[in-house]
Length: 67
Image (cartoon, rainbow, N blue to C red; front, side, top):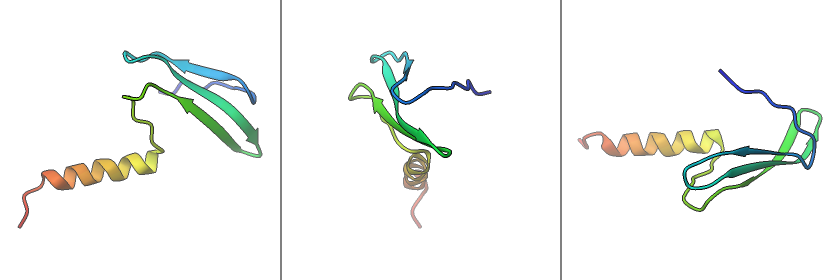
């Protein structure tokens, strides 16, 4: 399930995290694309989904026995 929010340029979404708040600010939105700025504590990793999937795949591969 997703929480779907509508925001205009300059508006923010705040996500509570044990390390501190994570803030998402819409910098620009037009024609189906949005530019989003993320302000998060330094110990919170922030990645695009495709980058995170590569990180997870590499970590999984490192756990496999080498032959």
